[in-house]
Image 1 (cartoon, rainbow, N blue to C red):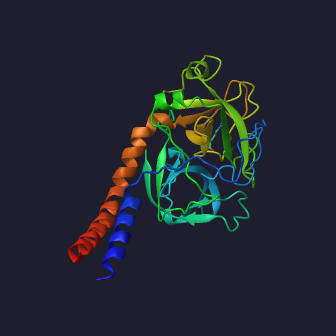
Image 2 (cartoon, rainbow, N blue to C red; image 1 turned 60 degrees about the horizontal axis):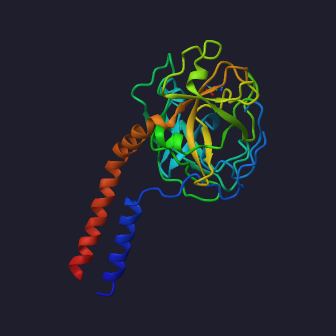
Image 3 (spheres, protein in one colour; image 1 turned 30 degrees about the vertical axis):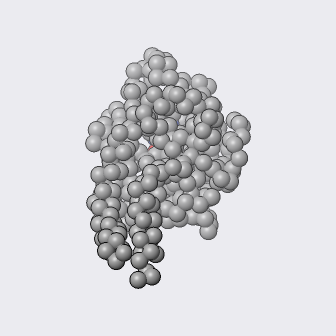
Length: 303
Ligand code: ARG
C-alpha cells in the first residue's frame, strides 16, 4: 500500500506537466541584455544570443532557419517547404543550440520532423501567409543554448509591447548572390510601418497585412538568401524578453535602400498558431492523458 502515494504524486506531476502552458519564453540565459551594435551589415552573434534559432537542414546542409516556439514546435516559412515536398521527410533535420554550422558541438540538439503544417492560404505569387509549423519527432530539452521565443497574442498585443530593439539572425549570405556563412550572424533592424513600406518608391503596394517590413531605410542591415524562415525578434524592455515578431520571407535582392526585408507578421497568425498546434498535438496528447488518468484512478482506487 506504500506505493499509492508515490503513484498519485507521479500521476499528478505528469498531468500538470501536460496541461500547464508555456510560461518561460524569450529569455536568453547566456547573453546579457542586447548590446546595441549596429546577414547583410551584421556581425557574429555571441554565444547563446538566439537560443530559439534553429537550422533546418536537408541531407546535412543548411536549407532554412526556424524559431522554436515550444518544445515540440518550430515556426518557419512555407516557401522553405512547398517546393521541397518531393524530398522525403527523413532527409530533413532540425538543429538547435548551434552557432557554427560546420561544428555543431555538445550543446546542439538534433531532431527529425514528424509533421509539416503549412498555412492553408499560402500564396506563392504574393508570398502571403508564409508561415509553417514543424512538429518535431521528440521535444527539445530547454537549456542555456536551447529556449523557446515568445509569440505575440494578437496585433494589439504586438503594438502594446512597445519594442525597443529588433534583430534578425541567420546563416544566410552577407551579400546578394553570396554564399552561406558558417557562423550565425545578427543585425539590428527597425520595424518599418506598412504604409511606408507600400510607398511607390518602396514595395509599391505589395505588402499585405500579414507582412511586416524591417531593415534600415539605407539598406545597411538586411536578411538575405539562406535566412528564410528565421526570426525577426524584438526585445520588450517591460517584460525583459524577446518575441518573434516576424518570419523571414522575402526581399528584393539584399541590403538595397528602400527595399527592406519582408517578414510574415506572427501577431497576425496567433490564432492559426494555436489551433494548428492544438489539432496535431491533441491526438498524442489524448493518448497520454488517457494513460495518466488511468494511473490516477488506479491510485485513487487503492486509497
Ligand atoms: N527568400 C529568402 C530565403 O529563401 C530570404 C530573403 C530575404 N531577403 C531580403 N532581402 N531580406 O532565404
